[in-house]
Length: 263
Image (cartoon, rainbow, N blue to C red):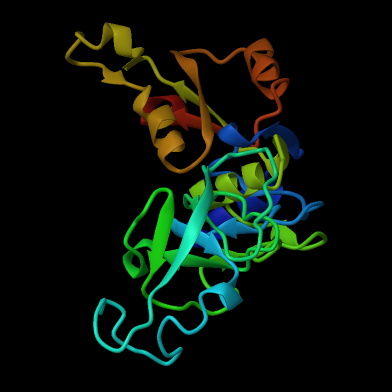
């Protein structure tokens, strides 16, 4: 007699693998990716502020305090304050390009596009938070608190590899790189046919001496397959089997009672 593991291996080897299909990325979660998703554009697609603050040219705030100063919360002591006019407020999602002139600052939100010539973002805690003019209490290095174009993904990078189970992170990345649909392996289809006079459908479960057969289909869903229930019947007809096979299930499971096997 074959062991359970041997029987499982034989069944899996004979299963018909569903062909990959393209689905909307919102419907792809939990499925296996069937293609190498190569990005065609960088992510982020523009230089953007990594925190709320002021976009500045780092050379304009140089000298506000020593670069190696370690107490980030300090606002007093041997500090030379610098004051810059605030030329604009740039919000996340802003589409109009802006340009920063020397010795100017622009208030920016997290994710806002950086104005031209700005090379750093000054954190709010290093300023007095001014609206028309801002007092600079700390200097900032070039490139600080800026997400550069392509920091996350460059054109030609593989965003999602074939064989990856698509989860929330992959769905978000696919959306970010502009993919609306993705090729995936669909869930296997499992058809369950229960044979036996003692079996009834769940709608007739009030008959206490009969067993309900639909939970077998529910179990297939728990296993990650798409279950299809076939009603219980006492005398399987050839046409009935043909109708089930025409749906091309990956697995076709028949369940017989002892009396059916003996008879």
